Length: 323
Length: 101
Image (cartoon, rainbow over all chains, first blue to last red; front, side, top):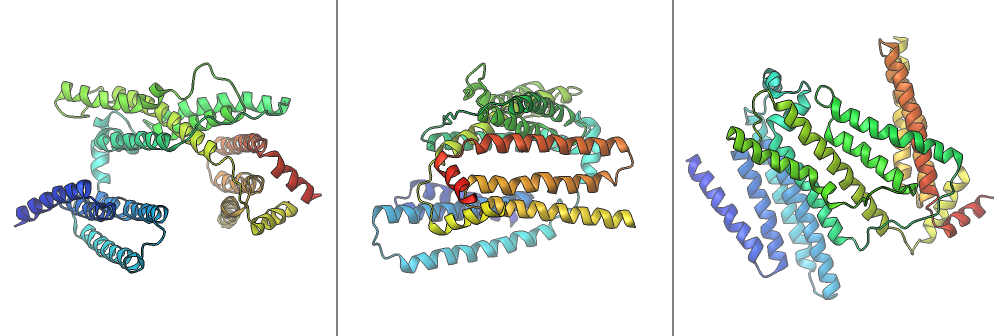
């Protein structure tokens, strides 16, 4: 009985995916996409991963679907201002939100029934000695569930690619900074200090809270400060190699571990720490440069904002007067 | 007991300043006002929370480190505010300055 359900879910997912990809109207594509997301979250439940199911239902079907619908509405307005969509504009979101609510209730209900979500902490603590690191979070992220982390890095990389494609220009406008001894002194202290702090967090990640994401964020901060202070770099910072080295090393590690041990990202015995550190270092570098790239893009696009309303102006003066 | 009350008070103050700073960052209309709001969160908010943690540690070295961290954040936030403020377009900055006088 359950096998029949699983098989039909799998089949319907593929059919719906094909409909979503190949339907002629954008709106029906979007609706099929939302249905696809909800079905995939069902599949995750059947696979015993209710946490992923919630994420899929909320982000994959709900949020992304809503974004697509908003985009579609905007496209309609841009193309033809007078298409009487009054009826569907209320019915569609309403039905979608009802459906989402139902499914969310279903997912939440299934969590309480599922056995596997009861407590993985004891399991993690038991197998911690084999993981090569002593920080449970790092062990889960880069050993037990390293495939998830690989996908996270891939998502970050894809985000950067998408924003790069959308950005008109990602060179920050150069502004002459009034240089002072104060500024120079603090810069000379803060930038090296944050680079060391990032490296420390990366290294300490194997035994205490820390790791690639934290280190990458701090390094990105150092890069942003240097960019804002007009410090010249030895090399071009929008470097494709640096942006992709994290994902590259991770994928390389996945293939290498598959060849060595016969299973993806299953590290050879006693070498786990080396693999984890290598992956984390590359990932931290990429995370830093991707975040920096995102900063550059957002900074260059919001640079001129012509229309400031009167009310805003008044608020500005009030804010200034208070200080 | 007194320590607990003091800790709760400091945390409360810190959170309040962080909340105010965040709201200011979101709601103020221009870059300079937003920076003004942010400094409150960085300086006072973090100071209160770091102090609240520092008076609860057994080891005075950790308290010292926390205070040093606060100083570091102070330094970085003032540096960043300075750098960002210099990038505000001239007309906007001038207008604000005139209205302030």
